[in-house]
Image 1 (cartoon, rainbow, N blue to C red):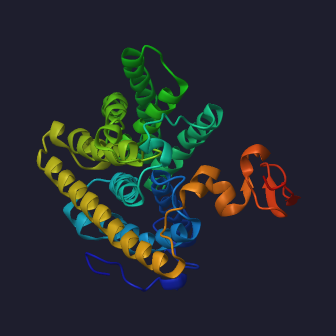
Image 2 (cartoon, helix red, strand yellow; image 1 turned 135 degrees about the vertical axis):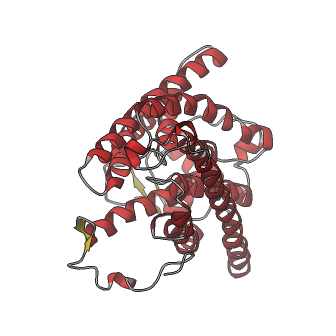
Length: 369
């Protein structure tokens, strides 16, 4: 490949079986990298949750992966120009979080606001217990992303695991304190949001910073991301799950702080606080390129997709107001985790898959009003 795009020598996994990537089988490396790719797309979809049709979403994710994620991953991790510049991104600050946050921002602007958000309504999470469980799984899973990025069971991997844990705990604590001061009450939602912010911020530096740097980065992550998610209310964009406020802004903060706290005794490169101020400029260049490319390319993908969908189906990539009111579980998939027959408004003799534990599809008959 070139400094800008990878080659085709491994197309359709050609030559992968039986080969090694460092000290591990290349098939394992492929599967590991695929987890980064899919989580990046999942973060973006949170930005336009409850608004985009399922079929255009699938097309968008496929195209975005090929024309946005893959080039950025090559630039940073595949020997591309940012790798040659020595931009430090151990586990996905640029590649995963800034790219998804910037793309999520562009997508939320392109698709428009949710009906309730546009009317100024508060739209709290559906279930705090599920939020807590999901955040707990993310916290543990993040060890795989960060420590696993060493691609070996070595000293750098163990340090990455330690600093990931410290930053998450510090982020959860500092967000909780910030919320406690400003809103007079600490919340579980705030604590887990802060933990995720801490995990995002430490991601680019997890293989480069020591425990002191990680602790400070986590403490800064909480209030920084807390205030950044308020931007959507000030500027009027509807980033439903705060992909930009937490992942985008957190990734930017993490990249900058990595340029400050990088310690050569951990990852071989010093940052500004260890006598290498040039690293901060290198980090800023990588951040700006990733942010700009991801944001603009998302518009380039979504605008033609919306026009094509509107021309072929009579409606764009966004669902109608009626479909949004019913909920996309019902309107797009004909199923609901929590079914309320009074709210379903289904056509007579239609079918509905009820509940997370039931696999059968039951016929539902509702009398016309």
